[in-house]
Length: 194
Image (cartoon, rainbow, N blue to C red; front, top):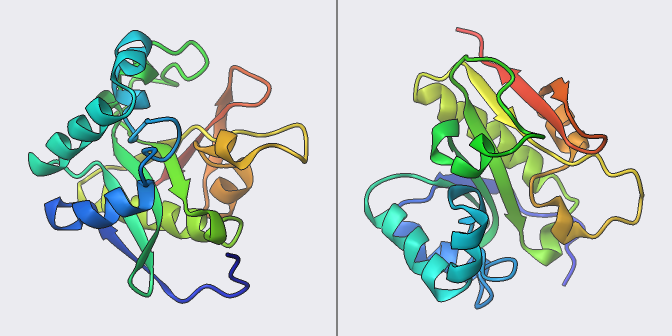
């Protein structure tokens, strides 16, 4: 189902009362291959062992604990998009990445993942989520928000491989590239003015 004009988006923190909507958006497969947005929070071997139900329970436990792991976008009452955002230290896989190693020792909040419902992709949902993520980070006292989008060299990339977002969306939301340790994976930042 494709929508030429999406209704006005409403974006909310993912809290226990929004779990059902989050689970509906991610579907039975947990977004991509049983991920449930745990990929950045675990070692690769832990992630492989926990794909599917174990990852679903782990994310539910995070949400039930009162931690807000991200934002959910709604078109009317339908959940259509997800953005994982929080302090960089929440995402242990970033610490092990040579390509996404820290730019400096300044504290940052990281945006590591998006999941947009199929009928709503390429319609600005990611940009809206990015802008909301900046506001959420700002409300928590952060001054730097960082993302790790892909900069595909081919025009026919597969949407599911753009789960960290696209450079073009980050640029539209006001992010600037600050480092690139890989041809297709820049590190982009948004500096929040006080």
